[in-house]
Length: 140
Image 1 (tube, one colour):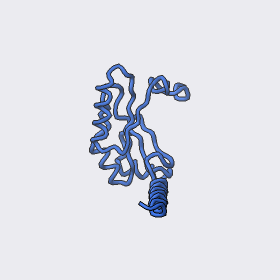
Image 2 (cartoon, rainbow, N blue to C red):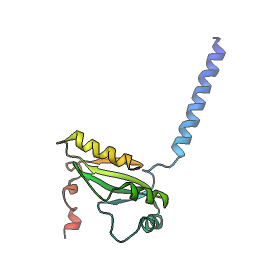
Image 3 (cartoon, rainbow, N blue to C red):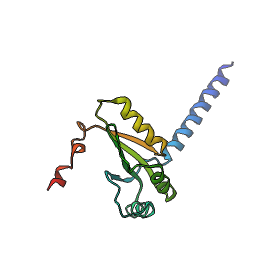
Image 4 (cartoon, rainbow, N blue to C red):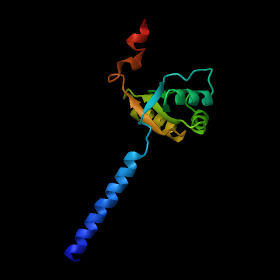
C-alpha cells in the first residue's frame, strides 16, 4: 500500500470515528437531563399521569426500585415498564446490592432488564447510607 493511500485511509478512519462519536454524543441517554427517582410508585397515578408529571418537570426518565438485595420489588413489572414507555418515558430499574448473594442480586437485575428497563442502576447502602432507611431530611 502506498504511503498517500495509507494516510488517506487513516484520515478517513478518524473522520468516520469522529462523526460517529459526535452523533453518539448528541443522542440523548437515560442519564441526560432531569429524572424522577422512585422508591415506591404512588398508588394513585396511572403510568400516563406519571409520564405527564415527568414531562411537566422537564424529565423524561424515571428510576423505579426493582429489588432490595435478593428480594424483588413487585412494583417493577413488564406492564409498568411498557405503559411508561408507551407514554413516552424512559424507565430505569434501580436495585440495592449488599453483596451477600451476588448471583441472586444479579439475577434480579437481569429480570428488570428483561422486563424492558432502559438501564439498571446498582446502589450500595455503604455508598448511599439512606438506602437503609429514609434520608435524615425525611426522618423529621
